[in-house]
Length: 568
Ligand code: ATP
Ligand code: MG
Ligand code: MG
Ligand code: MG
Image 1 (cartoon, helix red, strand yellow):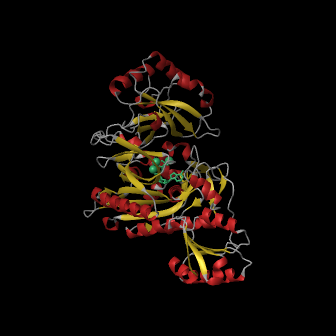
Image 2 (spheres, rainbow, N blue to C red; image 1 turned 60 degrees about the horizontal axis):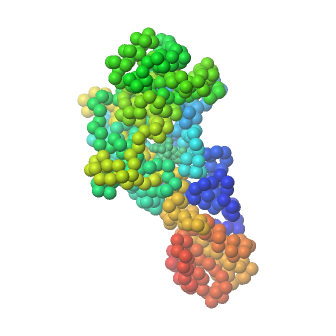
Image 3 (cartoon, protein in one colour; image 1 turned 135 degrees about the vertical axis):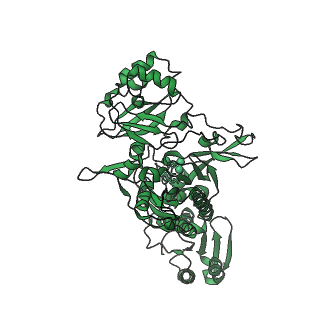
């Protein structure tokens, strides 16, 4: 490709919006452009690198037997209502209606859609195991979109879903994906760690996050120098916890026969002792026209004692109980009246009880009839900001496995794998018939890679003060041939010859044939980060050129033939 013809504009100045290196350099190199907050378009060079990452992901997924499909980003609410997540997802989900008022969302993820496909098309054990994946655009209305591609509201994700007959099958599928992820991120040139993670809103029984190490990363990981404990800081506290024998129940929406008003409930709370009632306060967002928010409460176990006490005091059924702290409520009562739509959980904040992790089967809801969920589980159904209120593990704390001091590192979550088990197959009825013609639940896993976030993570780990330094595997082009003076015919001819040689050999090459000053061209070549630069200047007459790797500062003077063959 000729830079003189290429649709590209590099920027001299650091754009105001950009704070971290990947965001700055991707903008300055003209690889991405912002449309609105958290929404970016890819320009020719940026898009080439995205496709390279996608191809690496594809190769590694296919090598493990994954089969690529492509589902719609537009998803009907009904499927999410079946799984219960329509009510639990919160304002990060981009919801919309069609002309007939039917509800949809732009998929933040696709568990429901893949489960739906498989439940209607898989009937026999002979069709399993199955691994289906797609590389597709996801939508999340992030509260704080920032850092360019790192936390955007529209982004490309590879999401894969495994369907197995039994738990041993899931273990194998999970291991396969874990291996594939290690290969993908290694090939992308990332330094990363796979760490034990929370199962979050996705749910399930086990999970690992793949975290690219970086100071600007939003994830914090805890690891041990003495044993192989490595976990997200949220998770590390409970790495060694014995799992509770109380099972997680599927999230359900329940109809409540009327509740007390917030004021009545708050009044009650005030006179009662907050300390003995283990309650959590949540800000619950409704889906009304204006963005309504108000406070509702969640109640946890010690159920016999406290629930009875509460239920008696309020005269309502157990699952309808909710209360709010008066002070918190004051700011928001005005908007309560406007609430009409389903409830999402968001912005969790602990006001009364901070012993939260691992709590099971809570009651959640709003002071509104028909707006309650039962069996809400921490981690599985909500997380929100609650983790910021928890006591996270810190550097120097004892490793929960071996007791040695824990170390901390920051990183970027580039991928995550989950054992889902039967969470979705149970709530959505995905069964297969076994050898004896008995119905069995399909055992599932899900596996995500943030393709566009990976691009940003690569730049975070591969740049210097002059620009990007692409690893060869994801570089938009491999070689740039720079003509120092385009007026000089010898230079032009020699550069052209080298360029054609490279193309013939299948090398992805750029030629900077623009009528620009040499300084501008060198600066741009550095910003763009093309791994090899061949500079054709004054010594063209002798057939000599400069050969330089972007990652090194020194260059060598070699013959044009040697330069072309070195690059090849
Ligand atoms: P985070 O903790 O950063 O919010 P997540 O845990 O919500 O991410 P997952 O649901 O695990 O994300 O999605 C799979 C992958 O998609 C993530 O590992 C990440 O690489 C990518 N991803 C998630 N949210 C975003 C986003 N807002 N912008 C870009 N990539 C994202
Ligand atoms: Mg998220
Ligand atoms: Mg995460
Ligand atoms: Mg995740």
